[in-house]
Image (spheres, rainbow, N blue to C red):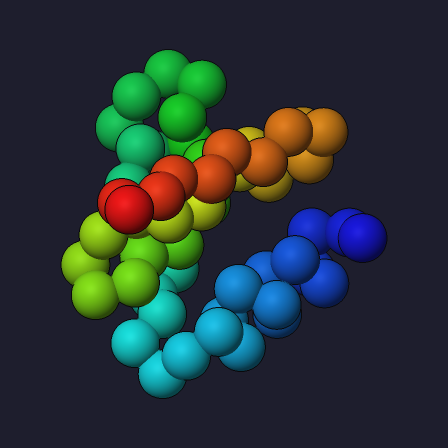
Length: 59
């Protein structure tokens, strides 16, 4: 799976999914793409290094 496939997958999970780059003001955070559901972060990864994906669960 590549970055674009993963991005499409995350966005397909529902109508309330958002993607943002919230860490642009921090050094080394410019390329971190974060996906949110209902305002809560659920997945993030560095667009410059797609070797790691971080997932969060609230349950």
